[in-house]
Image 1 (cartoon, protein in one colour):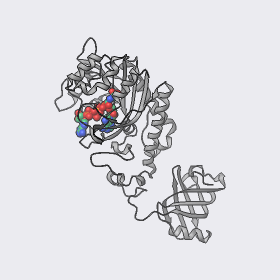
Image 2: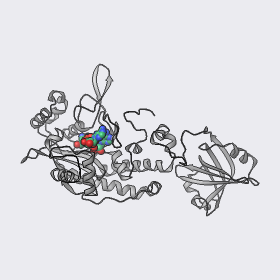
Image 3: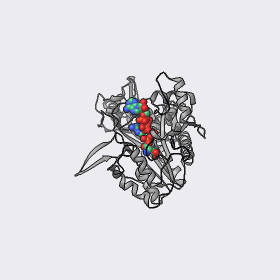
Image 4: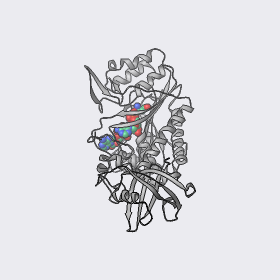
Length: 429
Ligand code: ATP
Ligand code: AMO
């Protein structure tokens, strides 16, 4: 029976493995093959004088990245990876890989990102690349565990919708019978409606679609958002929830993904909580003192400002108390100073990871704020209706999964955190 390569030890005596031919080195009388599966790499050593004829025949014919099944005896060898090697009694080629390969899996020749993404199935055969997705899988399951344990209901909201949530632009229209429809930018309106439904604490991990026109290293056209919404909570409550979750996710990766972290060669540190709270007005001052571009109170924070403030802060932090004017209509203004609102962004020194707010739960104020943004409240009737029949106060946030992974693992391009990224130029594979 086949066992995972990482389970093969000299104590096994005999073992059968299956995997991909990572490397072949023919030294005349001796051939070394490295065979790789999801769990690791093992050296298969063939001594020409001793090996069965069928084994020699198969090894001669095998190409790199073919799938093989090998059974034999295990021997302790210091020089081999994992301190052991397999001397085959049987060697079967299960599935042949054509040569040349579209991408070099052993990375002797570095490939550019486009070439890698075009042959993504081969690219993720590299342990260093697979490591990103092991970490991402752990982050996803740890998110479900953490929020479920705290009493959150997991919900699924529609991705085909009739209205924008995050402003009128950046929408992908789709052909939906005779109706006008779009891919959803955020579960925002639906998670809020579930507060009127009495669910109190909900979360969703799902796709969001943004028709960002430009190519940047931190924007995708299809991203994954971790969204939460909590009733009878304010912005401060959900900021604490968010920093606790981020710390928990780092700790889960630290605990369960040590191999992946080693493969990636990253410095890994679980962030300390609480994260500093930096009022927007102070953030603007820091940016103004550090950058050449003109920047004033009321401006959104661009890439350059984010970077400058991030350098000053040097750790995760929140930017709080934003001008109401530059945050979405659903953010709650302070009662004593309506020019600023109970919205926040959660930042990594490199970029924004999450936005959130206490929401407006009063119907009339919400209508007023929608109109103040130049939007037509009539288009939001389905959303506004629940606010007329008992909407509790509530707050929530959305955090980009890919940005979280990218900053956690020090990746240079957000596309590296997605198996099959969607950008302006890429819809295949
Ligand atoms: P959000 O998700 O809240 O929109 P974000 O991190 O995506 O946050 P944006 O508000 O879209 O950030 O933009 C923040 C800054 O990032 C912008 O002011 C701009 O400087 C830069 N930026 C955003 N989109 C692009 C883009 N497509 N091309 C170049 N720079 C961009
Ligand atoms: P926002 O628009 O800030 O807020 O999105 C929340 C988070 O989602 C991620 N994100 C993206 N990641 C990659 N590519 C993109 N194009 C992209 N767009 C967004 C970011 C961002 O911080 N409804 C609010 C959330 C809320 O208030 O609950 C919202 O969508 O990490």
